[in-house]
Length: 423
Image (tube, rainbow, N blue to C red):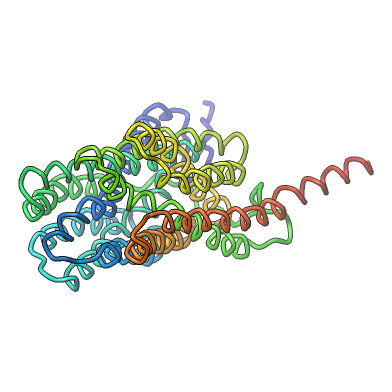
């Protein structure tokens, strides 16, 4: 009787007899990961909607309010490192259950806040134990469930993040306009608990066959270059990259209000940005599989660097909406691409930790970008310096990516050509 072969692909068991069933289940798991990431990203950027009502009620400056986003971002980065480490070693449900409970609880607490201390504390908890338990672990998990197409899997999960960044603030804006900011936070808290906790309990680890694969040189890691070196420089690039992308994300709604758009139209700028971000994440995920993760990252970074500078120059609703859509395409592509770069350069068995570390520097950049946008607005009375600083961060990111390209793509390619000519 013939024996049906069982082959391990990136640590995932691929049994031909159950491939169809496994594929269906894998896509369901990726969809669940995308849904949780959507709500996690939405929780972080909701502060963009609450900037105006909180500032009007308490008289807090935009720099003070933007600092809440920065604190949540840094806390998410730290939480992502810790949770990414555990995600490589324990059942995933133990990690992401925090992510299913803490965001909702944080929103319930925010509905009762009366001081900036409470604002910062609840956003710190939201990031550290809530969103930090979602981002890196679920991106890593999705890549394991679809091991043959990790770019597509991470693109889908990232697209979920884009949907959440647009949908959840848009919903929050309607709740604020209809009921006020305190009931809006309360209703969001209930919604998050009802949706996220069951999803966290349902998600499972990807099936594995044997031990985790040993660390090997990836196609983009030339011999003699350590993964730690590449990850370190990638962290530097991602910090500047996310500084560039955070300023439009956090401040585009307030910029729209300053330019005369009503509340719903201002919130719509962020919604359009994130809806187009879904397409950008999927598109750049596929581009990364074909052209290379680093090359896709460079293209996306160049686009967001050029577009970020243009936001304060737009003076009409159609121009702002068009620019928001284009920015959504490229900034989301940058996020998908740098996660794939982190995955490629991770040592064997430490994918979750590597993604968590790189994403933590991304959150640091997001924190700096969001905070500096509010700070320079308060200092200068205009968003032009804020968005110019964002573009300078994008230029720094491109310089570091140029170094990585020189080391990992250009020089190995030139050596290969030289060897072929000698042969």
